[in-house]
Length: 364
Length: 261
Image (tube, rainbow over all chains, first blue to last red; front, top):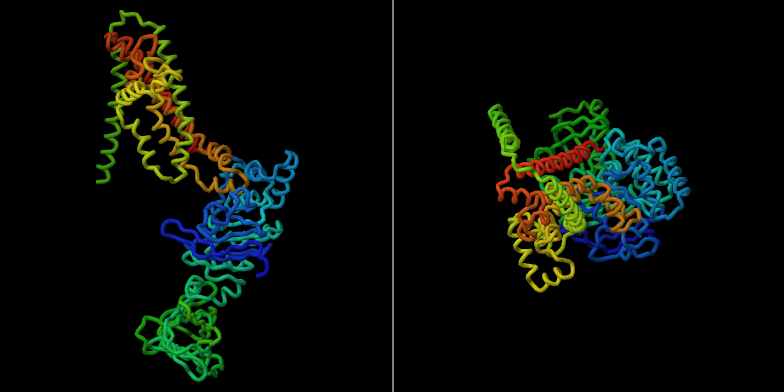
């Protein structure tokens, strides 16, 4: 990436038994970057290092080529939206927004104008005199964001901004939040463990697991092609197996014990690898139809163990014939397929793996 | 079993309440029936009240000024010797006040103590001694109460204020104190009440001299010594009234806090 706006190199930090290890992260100007990871993966700690609230033991952080580690938090030109919004309880809505103007040293009339502009931008004008305790979660978020953006930061850091908002209201607020950030023209780093939120909001994503930044890239790349097993597991991938490779004339066979998977990828024989078979790409084969070429190499006969119905899809557990396991594969397909193929527990069916979707993790 | 447990709780509360009320009632009853032939010296009462108010106010303000940075330090920072400092501050709370007074008296007999006594004093057998004794006695309590008040302020407010361009001192003045002010006020009132009732260390360092170092607790002691029971009861009632008023004020501050007022 050419001249990243925010650049983190080999950042290290440790506290108690937890540590951030060699974090490398680049964010372009104007980008909406989502930092995704399970709870306790170190996302908030990394954010605190960027903000200057934690002192890293090594590495560098530069913003527009300025060394941030030399500056105290108040001089870093970074906006911050904490998880609980941290609206000052002793100040009104207007007081909270005005509080951020301290660093800009404006005259009183200019301050008034700036507060009015910000209130209009977030449509919170009618709330100006309100006590912050009386605001809803969405209103609190708007006030906190207005307060963070009024300082005109170079980058705004959002720490799980939807964690205190109920599920039903979140989706609308996702769009409002991104629109506000876009309108302000500010670069954003958004922390979340919510996959859908990350995919909807992020231009680019980075995935953190156990204090390490494992993968960064466009959201489609990260979600479609996780680079490691840990990222795949976090992204909700099912059907992860371990096996030894065997060379074939046209690819590789991975022996998973009581069944094996063939792939056209060439992997040296005898290597221990992990593979991921994505549930939505395991197809149910109808006996009256020919099997497509891309499905032919991995066909399994077996039995439906159970079917779980969700509002938008079905999840099915499948046991390969002769397998000692309770179930071997999880499949995901549109709800209408269940009716069309008359699927039910105990039914014998045939499934096949769509070869391009098989992900092999060689470096575990 | 649940019913018996609830009954035990209620009975305990009733017994404790009756016992404490009985103590106050005993004082009032004794006052009504005691020999009031010895006329109460209102001048002495006024002197004791004024001296107690003055010394308690000065010592509590001084304790608060010293405790605020100490309590904030203990609340927010981890540093080498923190446990030692914490333990040291507890000493005046657990130590007998007479022992603290004796320690102060001995200290003023050392070269450093004499130097301080000569330049900032005199403290021994003087009003300054009362203030110093009260200050030392309430310091630990003051730090404890203020630390609790600061612990109640979410550090996230401070983090956030830093990102909004405020340095540590500005954050303390514009965020921590305004949020914790009810706790600070409650701490001041309790510390003041404790200083108002201080006796042991005062007696040892400043002595018990009528119209000189005669705070209300000292006056109670002097009247008890001279078997002037009627005057002693008057002083005790004044002490009870001041203490109850202060505790009520502290409760009110906390109630306002709970109501978000």
